[in-house]
Image (cartoon, rainbow, N blue to C red):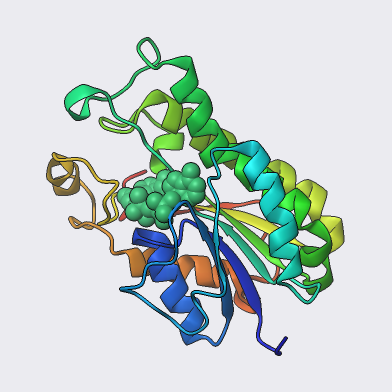
Length: 243
Ligand SMILES: NC(=O)c1ccc[n+]([C@@H]2O[C@H](COP(=O)([O-])OP(=O)(O)OC[C@H]3O[C@@H](n4cnc5c(N)ncnc54)[C@H](OP(=O)(O)O)[C@@H]3O)[C@@H](O)[C@H]2O)c1
C-alpha cells in the first residue's frame, strides 16, 4: 500500500467516468474502477488493470460480493466514492420509455444500477469512508427534476431518488465526517446522448454541449478540501439548462 488517496469510481470505462479517472490520476490519486466489462486495454492508466473490478451493478448479489473484493484492495481507508455508473434504456428505434410503457423488469434494472448500487457500496464501505473522512459523489441528472424529451421515466425517477438519497446519506454519514453530494449533468458529449440533442443545446444559455472533463472538474471539487464544508447538496452542471 502507498500513501496515495484512493477513489472508488463506478462506470469508469467511458464518458464522464473516464474523464474523472484522468482528472484524479493527474492529482496523484489511486483509482479503483468498477464496470461490467474487463479493463479496456486500449486505454491504460497507471495501475489500471490491477485496480479494475468487473461487476454488474444491476445484480444486487454481485454488488454485495464486490464489497469484500474492494475492501481487500484498500488499506482501511477510502477517500472518495463516486457513484457514476448509469443506464438509460430506450424503446424500439430509440423511443422514450414513459410511465405507461416501461416494463417493470426494465424499471427495476435501472433502479439497481442507477440507485441501489450507490447505497449498497456506501453502506458496505462506511468504515473505510469514515476512516479517511471521505466524500461521496452521486451522479444524478437534469432529468431527475423535469421531464426530458429523451430520458425515460425509469431513468428520471431513479435520478430523482438518487438526489433524495444524497440528502438522506448526508444526514446519516455526516456524523462520521463523510460528506455526501450530487452533481446533475445536463447535455454532456458522451454515448448516452440521443439524436436530437442539438435542438436542446440551441436553447441553453451557454449554447453548447458540455465536455466530460467539465463534469469531472466538479466531481474533483466535491472530493477535495475546497468543498470541506459542503454536504447534502446537488450541483447543476448544465450550461444553465435549469433556469
Ligand atoms: N452524458 C450526459 O449527458 C449525462 C447527463 C446527465 C447524467 N448523466 C449521468 O452521468 C453518468 C455517466 O454517464 P455517461 O454519459 O458518461 O455514460 P456512458 O458513457 O454510457 O457510461 C456509463 C458507464 O457506466 C457503466 N455501467 C453501465 N451499466 C453498468 C452496470 N450494470 N454495472 C457496472 N457498470 C455499468 C459503463 O461501463 P460498462 O459498459 O463496462 O459496464 C460505463 O462505464 C450516468 O450516471 C448518467 O446517468 C450523463
